[in-house]
Image (cartoon, rainbow, N blue to C red; front, side, top):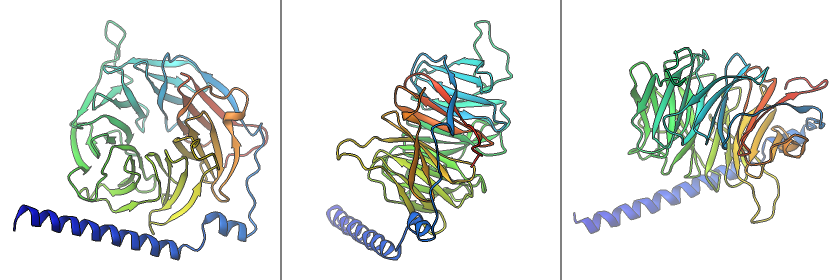
Length: 377
């Protein structure tokens, strides 16, 4: 068989796959006769009421001299690590606003950071294509610099996101601009599994975000510039177990719902979406109506501890609080006093759900706490 014939057959097969995918999409849409909000309204459910004093900015963490790109909380709630364009990681005491560590990075172009489950180590990665691990208990050198305790090398593109496997300080998952995700053994510094890349079911563009299922740490989801989110099982690295379509732009952020059966996404198309990992269905879309050319990108998302609220940061400095059940925006932190003066680049909820931290290109982080008689939801 000639090369020309092979190319022709490949093109025909690709076209057939596209047609089948479209038919499958239309069939799924025909079966989805409602969404979460439609059903909730039919049952007489009402949105969460939120006043301007129910979530208040109680602290501003100042210390970075460049844009803040990433943040993470420790599991015991009172410490935060942040990564900035200034080439530093800062570990903060969230209760006192004091800095406990200021780590100068080997590569200033950092994009992501994460705390280990025990809070003893932090990981970070960026344009150097390496995930660096720092042990916070290590002694500093004569210049006061905390040495790198482990460098995880193997990606062929920038490291966009990293997350430790829950309850393990020895394994973490990274995502990269090389279109793959990697499960690492930190003890050996070696790759345990690579997800995507040469495999047909992998992402076809940069992978921007990962989220590990808190109920089953063998399962994680990834979001990519190819406009999809993909579900992976670490025991089956050769293929994604499910692919989720719907977004019309880069998927910048993915986050598992607290029950582990659903996950949320945030995209350049200005919407957040909720998907069910069991059925593969899109359950809800969360977006505000804007002018055609004035849709702010969603940069980061997080769920409240019950899942009733979805926090979404936007490129225009807004930070919406969505009622996930009614798909209604109940509060915009960007309109409150002491809000950020730039793009919201990252956000995260404390382990007990009592506080939200946001990071911004204005170089600051802010801690928002539930005020008044508002209970944590």
